[in-house]
Image 1 (tube, rainbow over the protein chains, first blue to last red):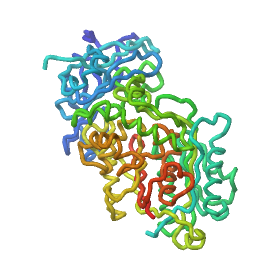
Image 2: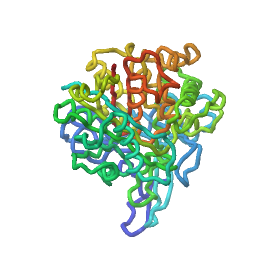
Image 3: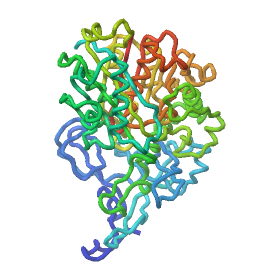
Image 4: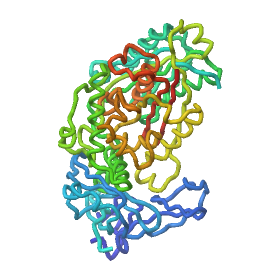
Length: 150
Length: 387
């Protein structure tokens, strides 16, 4: 859905990612930064120093895999106004050695509560979806994860 | 470092006080502690005040404007849920270092019925709010997942977490300072509405208002002022922050900084977890209490489920071999953020000194008490007290 031919014009409402680490082009994916000293990967667009080894970089952009595995999850039944519940929040381990948090979709939250072990290690893939419109009329695109074959 | 003793303590019942101000709540606890210590505000040389929600509003000075403006140094402390215990630690260090002989710590909070804490994001345009759209950063989600990690690693069952809530509520029926003083059954807990799986309503601490205070003194002052009364010594005062661990920046790791703080506290005091007569630990959620049994060394890694199961939940219960949260803990006693860390030190001190305020729930022959607090972001304090 986010495969646009051109980048959105400055004045023309278009699609905007919910976080700067989320890129919509050429296909929706996350980008982290990697410490050249120790290899730790962070979900940031810039950093002054590495919180693992203390080195002041340099940091290099790393495109992150769109596939990962569920570490743990919770089913949220009470949330902010406008957020539909219940939904699943999950910690997804990516192969680059960093973990990301997002909603796990296409899984029945109440069924998963009955059999929570099913989620541990579940292979998932990133999907993009529009979650809101901002004040300029741009569509805000979020990343979420759904079960995948591997 | 010099020996430091807790000469006096005070707390007000946790609950809801919409007609009182934060300084009034803090002043009430301070006055009780001063009276309990047998000193006046004129004797106090430094005051450390813990409060979170009015951290920019000089709560400590405003308490002294109620209690007595003597011109002493006041430190206002904010450290998430570890705010009160960090204030206590500042008051402790001030005496231990030799700089002062009598100091006061107050923890105070007024939360009203404010609900879920944490989460957010999005800057000035709510369209970019991340909460609920790319996962949850709210406290129920964080601690729900801390429990799920335990379940993943060790096969922990929902009943294990739920039993902690039953125990907490049983204990709280004997605590006149507790926000809730009602019992719940295992069925009540398991059938209550889910807030964030696996924690149901009774497995989440309430919000509320409250205050607690302590007066700390050097050994010389203790001899002058105690008048033969039994007083507890601070045998260790440890504060840690979260070291880098895998996933910590995505899902706060509540375990590593607690394990490190416990190890350091036991080393400092020269004792081990088996010597601890009672523990007040940070059970903001039932899942948190379960993982902290292991983090504090009360049982081995992976044994927390068994620990709560044995003797029908007897191990961590009043009358068991390692009573935990006999006050009712945060789950029942309540969790006014800034007050919590001082209140659990009060509880430990009362058991060690045979104070009337715990006569309904006295842990027999208590010699060593542990008070643990964790604030997300993260900060962990552990205080070991002995008599």
